[in-house]
Image 1 (cartoon, rainbow, N blue to C red):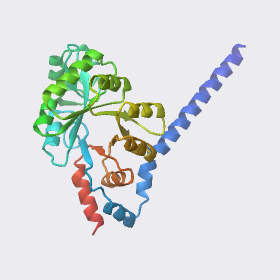
Image 2: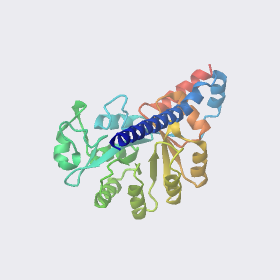
Image 3: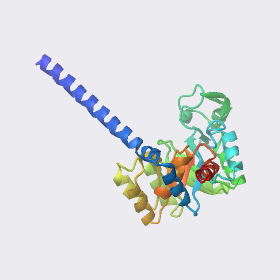
Image 4: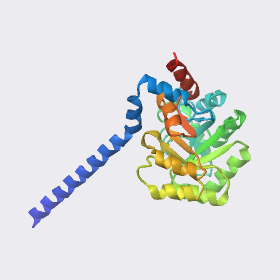
Length: 293
């Protein structure tokens, strides 16, 4: 019996491995779908798409600031984005500290020697260098919002912290409103967005998803709550773009650092927002000009 159980365990482990590898393979296939499609376009087809490039505004969002030119989620990266005329909004990731403060950085453990920013005060968080770039420091949300307001950019605030309490959210939202900056709140966490929607019926909110191939329940709920969509661009389907647009909602994509793909997504998928690490508006304009030569 023990030997049989051993074989059964091995079989179960083998089946799990097969399922995981199959899922990874499917994910990889979907992951290159939009990229692969655009890579096969001839120059003449791309030139035709360039002629259809939206006359309406496509809004470009600086991903964690202009993060190709300055280290991500720093005052320097935000300031560069604020000075760029082609940038509409500046995105950042927000985490709560132990004393109710808020800091901008990508992960809860982004500070050198600190495993979770929730365990330290805002003062400590702001005075501790970043783990992967010890010459840089994470800015406070107040500094980020001030940069956005002074640069007349929309603050695109991502609530990444799944453990952020409703009290934290109340304080953060009030802080954003009082800053006077234009803003929208985005998150992978529907419960956070749903809570904010209950408090702010007219606020611009955006649900982040990796793919629209899965999770239709969450996508339908977003539409019912008047929440926009933002999807990793490789895994976005036109069907869901149309569903959100038909509901009067907007669609964004992330993170696009290729002018060809940005142009194609704007034309083929009719997206409203493109999040990027680079000065993409100018890159797309130069790319289109090159196609016309």
